Amino acid sequence: MLRPNLARALLSQLAIQGMEPGEDPVFPGARSQSLQAGRSLVTLVLEGVAARQGARDPVCLGLVGPGDLLNFDAALGTGPDESALWLTRGRQVVISADSLIEAIDRDTLIETALADMRRRMETARAEVTRHAHGRVTERLAGLLLDIHALGGATEVTLRQSDLADLLAVRRAGISTAAGELRATGAIRVRRAAILLSDMAALQRAAAGSVGEQVPHSTVTDLARLRG
Image (cartoon, rainbow, N blue to C red):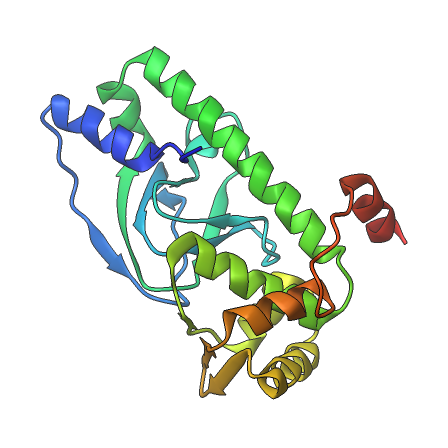
């Protein structure tokens, strides 16, 4: 089943009302805005991949990609503010929540909010699985695979400290994990960038073996998180 493109759907609704907000390019390492002059902002992701983060916590709460929304729930007053760290180049539209509420009918806003909530729950569940999965090498490989799957990127231009924050590990752990992945040929490392060079090797690393990844339950993942 295809993922609904929430960003494009909202842009279409705005165009019907005669509103055409401008697009902006974004680059790896940039952070999204949730407020401007006291007004809540919503980011419509048109291209690229970003990692959701809480207002004060750098840990990755799930990935967003083309068609996703950032801070939509918070801007409508039903959740805390969220920010995001851009992991790849991309394009975005940033619009105030007030403008969305004024231009789009209530039923469409509710339907969009529900779809956005379902997507955030799915990505949060994926992050619980990742953080509970064990070795840093497997978690890093899984993150890189998800970035590629969501946005098609074959290069991740981020500092090791940013990757460490996203996975809630020490920077030295990222350095060691990157070295292990490089030794298998899964990636190549250059200054402030990771190149995905062998997707099959990366998948084996994410699985923790040369065989297929064995499914595991969220219940088990939560038990591991609790220690």
